Image (cartoon, rainbow over all chains, first blue to last red):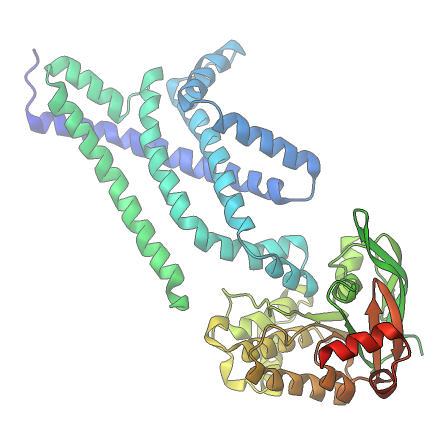
Length: 217
Length: 244
């Protein structure tokens, strides 16, 4: 048995948590960019694009993230791409996040009353200007709580990347638990670190929400 | 002189239900035309066809010499710059201050500079009696004030015609007067107005011509005195009688 003090456990977990953070950021930024593109296609006027996005969203919402990770890892190799656990995890989480974010944001856009579109149209704004200056700023305000809620899901979802051998918080926890034979202590610390990551995000969301609503109080 | 609004043979249906069944209407420059009729008679739909908010299947709409091409975004943008619209529900942009509401379209569509747009917006606000509200948010205003801002916002694009779609119907009775007064002033200044209204007293006082719509057609039209005092058709007589 390797002699690990509690401090050693925490230090090693904290080091591994960096990769959880990096993976979450990639998933969220990548997913946000792809999701925004999907959103524009989904509410746009091309029927083909709308159908494509609907199918895309159904596909990623209707299959487990775990399967998506497996498929990205083994599937890309099948097509001759040499993938690391890194790229596979980043790719799968980006696609997964983009589908969910596009759907969350579509709901927010559709919550804006029709009269807002009509007023913007009557003022001769084109579709892009209507979206950019009238609809999206209002949708943004109502999008914050569900978006951050999903961000927390993504942070926790990165734990699944351990299954394809990516060493992040959960994987490091498993390795340390196997080495120390103190699974309860180690996984307790792992859970604590996830909480430390997620709680400030929720807190920030609440602040942001209050700030954006301020002119309406 | 060609009419500002030229509607010919306009037909529109939702599925099997025909809302407009061949409407012809011309509005000359400086004319004030009031459209009256029961709900469901097609009067709001008619108004919304003029600036392309509703699609129609047959006929044509022209504004200030431009023909409305429903499938051509650039042409539609051109035409909409000539048409202002005011809604029953105000539809101010709640995330923008009163001033920004008015400046948005002139800066985006007409590429006006910020200073110029602001000066124009302040002048328009003064015109509707809200000079001090430039920095207020829409939800800090009463309904009547919001509707007056909406009028200023439409005027900022210097339209050739203003469409008013039951603009006092959502207001508390004590706030109706302030909005109608602004519209009356506009009419007196020579603005071309096409308005759907339930305010018969106002229509009688301000309109040059009243149009009574019934089942998707213009059933009777003429000067207000003639229509209100000696209606020619039983449908209009019945409609007017129901108001009292």
